[in-house]
Structures are given as C-alpha cells and as structure tokens.
Length: 327
Image (cartoon, rainbow, N blue to C red):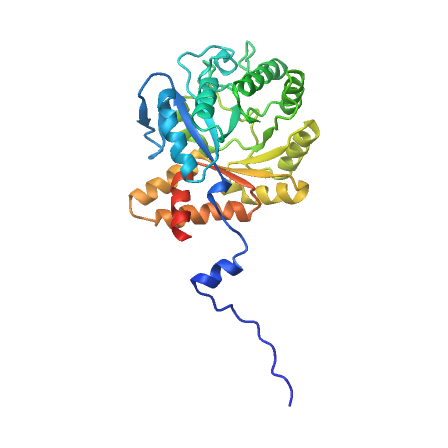
C-alpha cells in the first residue's frame, strides 16, 4: 500500500498554542515613549491634533514617569517647547534648557528610566528650520554641526543616557561622537535618525512642539519619499561616523525601508511611529470606523516584524496596558 500524497495544511491553533507558534512578539519593553515638556507650573494640556498626548510642565513629570515605569515602559524621549526662540536655537544647548531640566526631573523621579534625547534645533529656532541659516534662508551645514554637538553634550551632562540626532545635517554623527568623546562621554551611544523622510506625517508633531518652518520646507535636508537605495547610503554614512543604532522615520509607510536597512547592516534599528500615524488611528477610532486596540497592536507588530528592535510611539501607554491584559 502506498502512502497518500502529502498535502500541507494550516495549523490547528487555539489561544494557548497561538503563543507557542507566534514568530514575532510585542512587549512594553519594545516601546520608547515620546513626551512634550513646556514652561510653567501645573500645566497638562492636551494636543488638539493628538488626543491622549499632552504638553506637560516639569513639575508634573514625576507622576507621569511613575505611571510609565509601572506599565513596563522604561525608555522615554523628551521634546521641549522653550519659552523663547532665537535665530540659532540657543535654548537647545543651554544648560538650563527645557529638555535639560526635563532630563534631571525624570532621573530624580525614576532613576532607572532610560532617557534618549532628540538632538535638533527646529523646536528652538525662530524660523523653525533645523540649523543656522545664511542670508538666503539656506541651512549652513558646518556651522549647524557645532551647535548640534553642543546640544548633545549639554543633554548628556544633564543625565541623558543616549542622544539621537534628527536634523539630517551631513556629518552630524561624527561631530557629535567627537564632541562627546572630548567631553568625557565616550560610552554614550548615538541613535541616528539615519533615514528621515520629508514626510506629510509630521503635521501633528509640529503642532504639539510649535516647530513648523516659518517659510519653505525641509525637503532640502530630509529624504525624498521615493528613494529607498538612498536610505542604505545614509545609514552606511552614519555607521561609518560612529552611530550605534539607526532609525527609520516615519515607520508605517516605510516598512520596506526598515526591513532593507536591518537586513543590509544588521544594526539595531528603531522605528518611529510618528504623530500623523497616531492621529489617523485616533481619528478613525473616534468615529467608530476601526477597532483602535486591534489596529494599534497590529500596526506596532508590523514594525517589530519588519525588523525594529524598538518602537518610538505615542501609543505606548495604551499598548502596554492592552498587552498586559493578554498575558
């Protein structure tokens, strides 16, 4: 008697066996939570275009950090809204700048919280661009590098565990690495925004941080959404300059790029689930068009599956709660 022809079939699974065969796992420890700090006292105001996200004054951070830590979220990234701005973004590298104050407050509240600081000038410049401008309104790359390096050093002196340059200036990773080494911080890692597209998904963030350009746009120094091979070249340059981790931003529309970067270099690669992606889900859920919980977890899982070692996301709190309920 011959054997019957082999026919592949789907696995028979239930709630228990699903966890055993699942290829990709999502957990609270995968999340980096971005938050906005602003001047004043007792401030906690919701960002209109980002329901559930707040601008918070320094004195309100202790409660926020304890809540995050109890949820299992142990990594954060503060974004500052300064009381004053100027042409060179001096608030970014001031020792008493809003982010530097926030870093000290976070570390005082929860010493075990890992703080990653965004290194850029756009939130602090009066013109809203990511660097120093010449008389024609064009960003001066080399002059900007000096200020970015000063910013990174001031953030680490305040207690930051990692710095993440997001400006997209040429040579900024090398300049920051040299400045940190010279300042006595050779072991502080750099998470480079290596692949940052000139994207329409950033609108709500610019609303939250009051960082929209006063004129023009940032396409001169951010990447064309049509380019994927350029992403590999940009990532390689940052690796050669000393980056320890890479980032792809935005994430959802660029999962192919995220996978390509991770496969090409094998470097730890972070996905930034940006403000516009967050806002779209919130708006659709508010209208009853989608199941927010299912869509959020599916979206974050797709980023992890595409190769992300961590995900910077405004959904972190909700996602951590939902994942805990599944355990």
